[in-house]
Image (cartoon, rainbow, N blue to C red; front, side, top):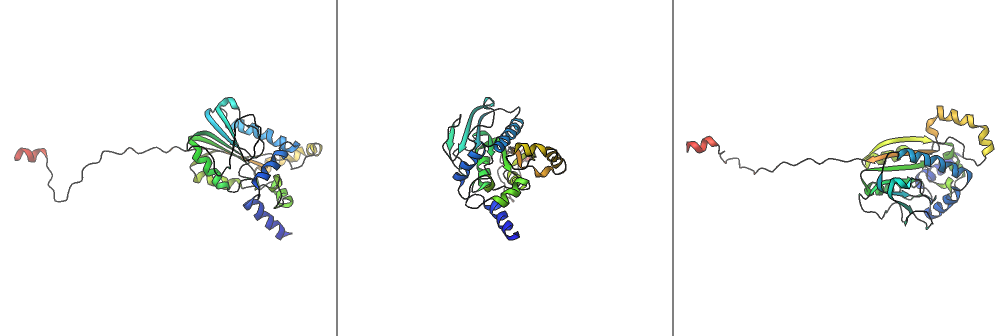
Length: 263
């Protein structure tokens, strides 16, 4: 049993799903479930608070299967959905991989990664691509599933290497993603954990243990099922270079005003 859990830990938290397109399709169905809709509702509110008072010309949402914009469109001149599957989202859709974004460097004001790192093959490369596409001062928002939660425990037990679905997601540690953001010159604004309900689609049963959710949030705040990271791309100022002075040889005499008068 211990060996099996060890293998599951390595599989889920390091390798992630094999087929990212199948994983996105499975998550697209899961987001329509009762539990999925509750997660979306909480995440909409988190994104709304993160971008409150901010405006921009362009925003890209790297989607994980929801196939719908999670941000307020009126705050941006254009909102783009990046997906690996063709879908009928009510906004412009670009079919691309998160590790190879088709945007010009420093062309976006905001990048939202909605569980993108949980399903892509190379999470660090995806964050790097987002950093390249962002303008200086641009905002990066990352939403992901927390491995140190009841949801992470269920993924270790139930997930299958060749399967697809939420329990086959990667569940990357939020501290690791935060380190990547620091390496890529992001200043972190928010690092939060949310959703303390067990991962079950039983509303009546969940209502009975609602008091336990509050205790978990109070005493174990790091065990939230979803984490939120918000950071902005730092702007580095340039040092003004002074005019270059001509180099003088060591044995060359120094000509001053007094020497000219004496001569």
